[in-house]
Length: 105
Image 1 (cartoon, helix red, strand yellow):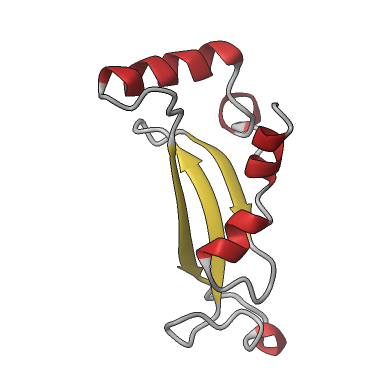
Image 2 (cartoon, one colour):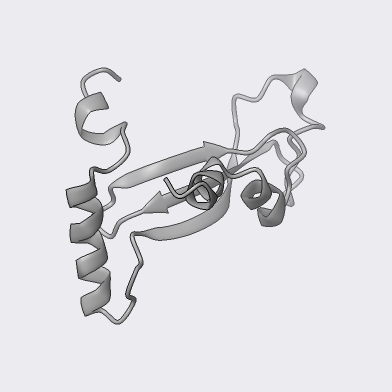
């Protein structure tokens, strides 16, 4: 993992954010810096004792995650929800990304 840290496992710089925002503005989305999505990811290696806490719509253990990605597949934000956070509103409510935005960071 340390091989990718400097390039991928970090927040984008101010220059990178400006470049991303410029690209989206040309497409008609001023102020956009990526695509936010909440999604489920089936967790095949979930410990048996945790299955009920992480049961998704498919009745299989599922992790809920929030991600912000750019169209070149650079994901600069990824957060997994707490056990039982089965819907997007629960994920977004506890979002560290939105907390940072509210603080003006």
